[in-house]
Amino acid sequence: MKYFYTPNDLAVYFIMSDLTVSDERKVINELWEQQNATIWPKYRTSKAHFKHSIYNELNKYDITYDELDELNILLQDLDASYNIDGTINEQGVIESFFKIIKLQLTYTPNKGYRKIKFRNLIGVFGYRRRSAQLVEYIEKTLRNLGLVANLRGFAPCNITEIKLDDTIIIRLKR
Image (cartoon, rainbow, N blue to C red):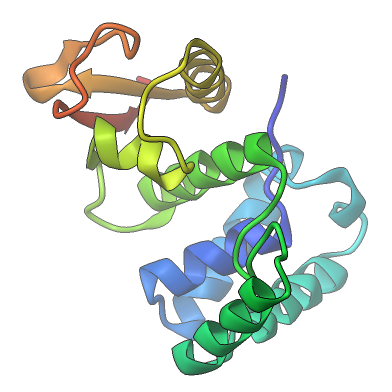
């Protein structure tokens, strides 16, 4: 299965990386010119449409944390099963998380790896314990995105066997 970058993925990456506007443009141009095959097919026909869609997504995120908290409290009061920055599609969350990491490792200068405790990683997806289905999906997503998870010192790790408190280091596959 091939994963494609969406305008939302790029918007989240730009926000997390706090890039300058010129660096954002550089990333967009590089993706468009060199790796057009990694862009969601709907956005491959027009560079202007692609850029416009990214900046529309950035505008959606351009609200204060107080406004976001207020909206989430309202949704919680309404017994909604989601919040404003979440999604119901668990697999989509996992894919997006690792696509953002791949963007960081590919386009952020001096960023060759991403460290995270395994407990925190599964916590990002709303889990407290590892499940076979979760581990399988994480491994599949890492493999398909060309990422590899290691322990310290490049020691290969099997996510099904590591301890929850182990720190995994995610790198681009060489």
